[in-house]
Length: 217
Image (cartoon, rainbow, N blue to C red):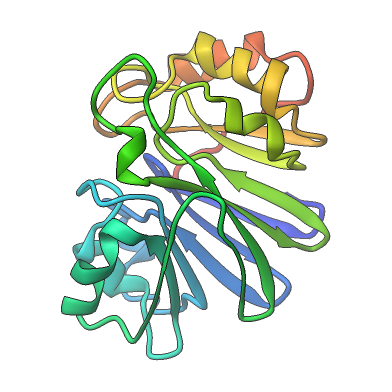
């Protein structure tokens, strides 16, 4: 999908390949399709946390190259360096940085009513700005107060329940806290938990912006 000069490719689960401003950005690639194999085209890779379905070396080897910059939650750094990643920036909630000239803000991502993603771990989501749009990848999270600070144009939001927000909780977070100016895209379904029905329910309930359900690349 192309939107305001940015190309969004959903790789399945929480994974995306986003192309804008001459850069190719990957987020949490996991079980990417054979059509995505051996591209080795990543300028920047974001890793939200250390669970196997977000930090997947089997998938990263298909996208990384020598000049790739990796920005990851601090809990991921040692594993990434051991796997041979050349440049790894470990980040924590609240950090702000520039990566290859691209502004990046690091947002907390955690559970409030389940134990899979404790706040103390420092797992994260990201806001990065390309083509004059603030894009928010929420990571694996529940509806949390920090979302009110993000103010994105486009929000990529988990909707499957079990480990993250349900479709209803995600829609409430979008309507009341995230409030994307332009678009919301559901994620975290169709691989380990959740289905397209969760994405459709989310679309029905979001009131503050359009919702686009992407076909998996």
